Image (cartoon, rainbow, N blue to C red; front, side):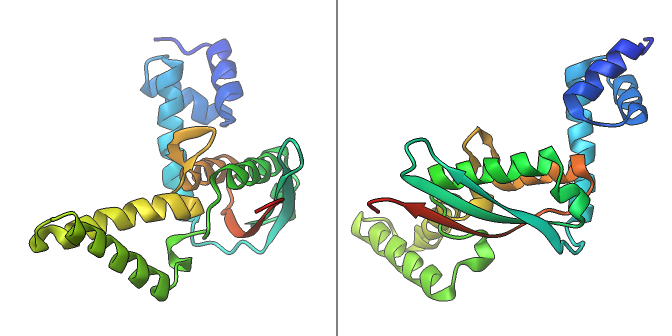
Length: 197
């Protein structure tokens, strides 16, 4: 199938990828734009994983104030260069993460931030609940493990389903931006304020 300039242009507008990458993706998917987008995303996420270890000492602080001014969030987002920190994509990501935090109320950025004390307390509660409901002792560990996964998904920002696209985690959304912008991106910190809370 012939890959036309119009097809490449359409894919570039939808994906933000380069001309040669778009041509290759369209060839691999026989001109199917949606298939090419999926192909580029997979390739980009693999690249994003490789960039994960790179130092991110630049970045920006952004705010999100929810309608009615009763909830506000301040987010510190790191990247590798001030060039990327000043791009609309990076600024949009800060705003999206701020909006997500306003809505989802995470307590931690990642699993690594959950203290041993909190983990032990949660495991103890889940085990007690399982025993109280009459579950056999031999499956309590499995139940606790499953409930801990749910705990992480509800309380850790990077594990939460993104409010604009619950099928993707916040970490997935960040990886997509890493793939697009070509730099490592890390959530440095956040604070959520709420009137009356």
